[in-house]
Figure 1 (cartoon, rainbow, N blue to C red):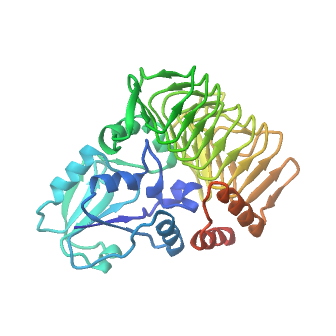
Figure 2: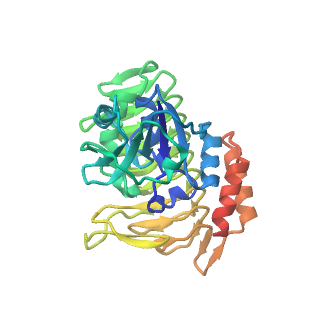
Figure 3: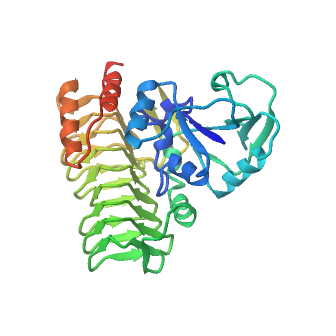
Length: 392
């Protein structure tokens, strides 16, 4: 059996993260979307498809995945913005196991989330006209925007811990606090699990006098610095450095917030550095719903709490103030004393006087330096993708 994870058509809704990543790379809970799919469909041949070759090749190289699609075999196609858990997996399997017909798969709002083909052909990726059996998966979560994750971070940390994470190298440090055998907890750390589980992964370090409230996931090699306050529903990927006050926030990985300042209801992509005192508002003074601007449109979110969405390789200077519902594009630098604009285009260099476009070669050179500090290399495929984004 073959499973194709197909990049969603509405990928622009997931900017700025989606400029350099597939949507299935989003971290929701402890794991990324594709990691959840791979866990449940572990005995399937999983391949990835996107009509943007640069984006796909960058992902394939970075994550060592497969893009070689096979034909003439039973194949399930799932959109990359589908969040798989126990219930949705079982429901999908029930509808396609032993199926003799091609099937179109919907969520409970009648949105298409995938297809099943008994005898798949490459043309099926583009031509979806035909007579299909219909299957409705009532209990599946489909993400439409990054901020859809903020209300479900905690429940997905719990699901990932219960169903997906290999617990072999973990021990229960306190009730509902599970730490890897290679993690280090210093004295004076207070854990509050009254709202959910806390998971501390391999080689992470928690400095003294921290407060950590569950549900919370702290990824491999992440450092939580002294006196940090982490409130419910936070997830930190690998190799982050975290300090200050945080709530309902995802740090994707390899990003730093090493100093004081509040970040809430926010999504921080890879290789981001937030300067000392950087603070993001996540609630308007009049308590009204937040309007978000992406590159191609404005969206009425219907939400009162959204902080900042910050793209890969962006940086803020000391004492940066981020407005409610701010979007900062990839490779941007914020260095101004007053409140930052709510939408910052990619490759922007903001100072108090003007906005300049970041020099591409300087941006790539800095990215190499930053990544080398974590023993990572900027691949040829990533550089080609960055260049293509700059030229748009």
